[in-house]
Length: 79
Image 1 (cartoon, rainbow, N blue to C red):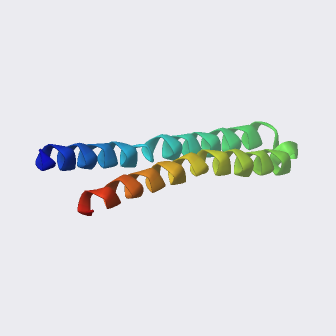
Image 2: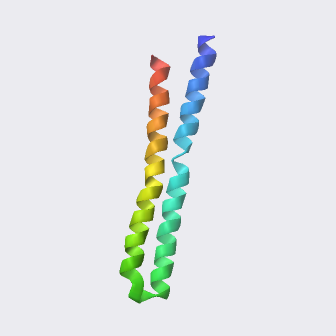
Image 3: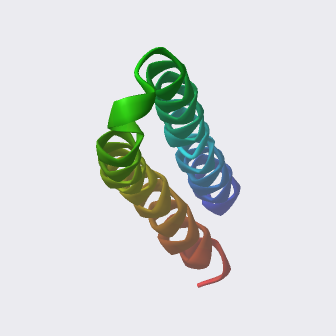
């Protein structure tokens, strides 16, 4: 029975670690759209860059949260 519990914890830690890929894609989309917007409107590059940094930080916070959850679950495997 302990092997099944360990397997379940390992799978859930792996799935939580996969949660980092979503924010990585989101940050790349934010960067791509910021570059596209600054190419179309060079006058607004400063405002676009500021907004891009804010939204990239918000998306990255979700990645850090998923990473933390995966480590918390993974630490229960050895206990």
